[in-house]
Length: 333
Image (cartoon, rainbow, N blue to C red; front, side, top):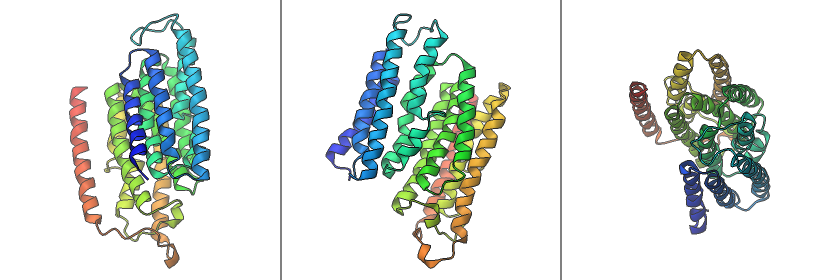
């Protein structure tokens, strides 16, 4: 339940990320990340059950150890530079700063903690850990990385594992977890292009994810075999297609923007991203097809949405607005 105390922790989580993003010193960045961790954990144990407590403990151990690693790297780096704007003098120091950030993001091969933690989260914290909690680390990474090859390797493995890992899952939170890893590879690719493309992708991902999580939350869904809808173009189906990046839905446009810029730079990673996107789209379509073919009356978990037309209108408006935004961004770039 979102009482006044939890609301305070929620605001602290938001503000601490903004502290890290706007800081110009390593210590301020570290402090913002620590405040973010401390304020996010009470939101994880909001409903006080064994699963959420276990998830919070795992999250604390991983985040605390990566923060200690990051602080040690910052101390070593302080001998060579004073603020964020200077270039690093050693690739080894770059890697030392990158690794704890990658751990915090849950990038492959540091992803297993993220998948395990998702099972103990409520839908609010699930949404936050997939979206908002990634913003500060990935924007900090924008200041750090100098070697594109290392980023390309993380993109490659995250795209493949995020796509293949979700194929065998039946739990919705694990499916969304692997989908988040796959989308993270797109965010890293956007990071290589420009900050504008990265922020655009994050905003669109947050919007599409919000619709999916809201449907799961309102219907109290945990497994995809609980879903039963007889309308192929229901709000649930449209949300799935959008999150998978199927054209012409909302989630397709940021991927198109990233691919356009990658292909202009002759980046070979584009093919891997397209393949991973097709695989993730497959298990989203599989969920939708399963929901359409369920015939048992005992499995009608998904409530009939009496406001389906309103949802469709909202999606059409968002799709129109997104296309106009991307045209405007392309004119600026």
